[in-house]
Length: 177
Image (cartoon, rainbow, N blue to C red; front, side):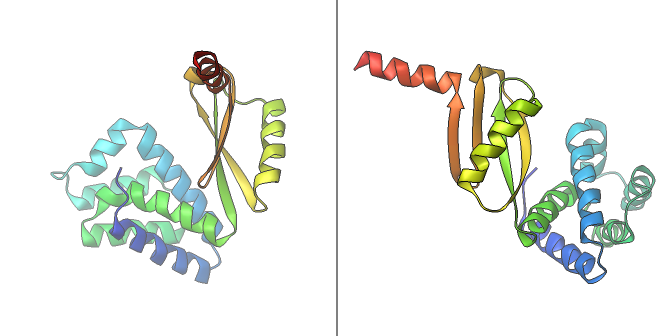
């Protein structure tokens, strides 16, 4: 999924509209579920990307799949129908969430762990985050068994590597010198 200038423009416009109607958070929840659905469902992704599927069919299918979304989100579906741009829906959803977080002073911390985080590790990570950032933080957990243990924390451009794989790499470098 490439983030396009068009997706950013749509996302900004939808955020402005949602803010003016006081439904930005509801629309953000819609966008998160849309992005997740497209990312995790190959069939839905292929359907949206398929250039031979009529835009009318795409719009009615999306309105059915996401029947409970906010009116602003349904308006986006209709706008994409009119402009024949359904292929950038996932990118718009992702960009919207980024813009929503930015406008609310929320920063996403990507935490890579060997296994899914438990409450104890989450508390440790949140304590470390408190020393790095004064913004409101939401945690996104990425599971990567190759780090062996510990965690890698990334907030914006900053990275804190407390993984076992990193410690082994450091030890290996020290021993070879």
